[in-house]
Length: 155
Image 1 (cartoon, rainbow, N blue to C red):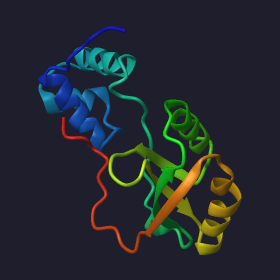
Image 2: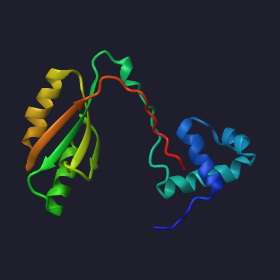
Image 3: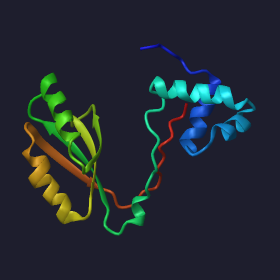
């Protein structure tokens, strides 16, 4: 894989696209005082090198009547590298798990989980998540309100 460090123009492109991925090459070029062709080439390179991994629409969970978000901290009973890898592979298959982080501290992983309601969350914990191997201690934190939601990385 090609090693590449984005320059300031690339960083400006990434910043703008993180805020509005619908910007056209022409609009980006105008904002950055460049022509369309080099902007297009830079965006394609950023995509090819994995700096831009996907372009998605962000949905506001508050618009849905039945949408509960929780953060689930997980401590595994076995701490081998293979167990960690297998856990991450299996958790990635669960639709309710939006994010999975291997963390430091008292727990091994933190998951962001979405469910329709408490009954669905309990079903997820009992019938899906609870069937995974090496699950030890769990700690759930349910989201009451969201003060900030930002997806753009400071580049």
